[in-house]
Amino acid sequence: MGARRVRAHVDERHMPARMNGPKAFDARAPRPLSARSVILSLLLGTHPPELPARELVRLVEGFDVGASTVRAALSRMAAAGDLRRTDAGYRLSERLLERQRRQDEALRPHTRPWDGDWETLVITATGRGPAARAELRTRLTALRLAELREGVWLRPANLERPLPEALDGVAERLVSRPGTPAAELAARLWPLEEWAGTARALLAHVGPARRPADRLAAFAAVVRHLLADPVLPAELLPPHWPGAALRDAYTSYQREQSGQVRVPGART
Image (cartoon, rainbow, N blue to C red; front, side):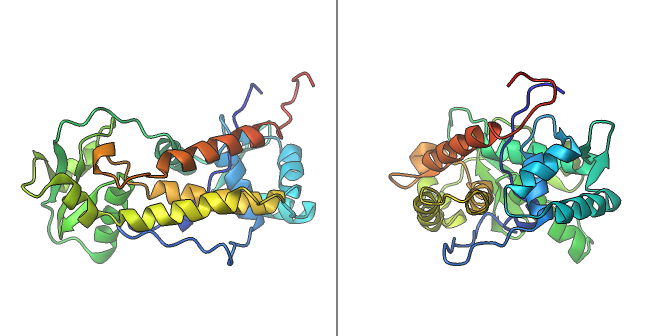
């Protein structure tokens, strides 16, 4: 197995349903860490996303999870299709590889200079059931679009990423320049002050956290919050926006975690 980059990602089941309203971080109520959550966090942050079973057990034990609990969780996750057994150990399933790609992009979004245009999607499909509509809303939110009114989604066109071709079957893509001042519209579409306040609370919390389990829980909250960052052009953000500082803190944690993995065959 070659060199790996290991990070602490988060189980996307806990991703906020809509970017328009992220939940506030409560440092007094840390999320309990299950064996499944720790295993997924480690593998979602590993490139390629595969580790030997013995190494996974060793790493997860470091987060206050017993070895027998880890082995049982690995078996359940393989049976459920979360993991795939390989000759080398355990690897993320194909469906979770797409989740890893989305989280990687969310944590390191590619931007371009903004010229004032807005990406706009108008939903044209009709007769879709509640589950299909909810699934589409989740997909559009993950693309960092926000809903102006029912069926109209938009964002500044500053992200260097294509929209999925599958959207063409349910929506019309447009480029617009709304009459409302851009900063005013952005403040209406996203709760920017609330996002910034939560980011600052997270930054204050992750520094003092020292136990590995506490640090993983804290940085899992950081990942969830970064997934809800609208990644707007700087001119549309409130002063002293903490997005870059939160990403820098997470990058430092990535480096910290990378040093914990023992790569078979590597020199020590």
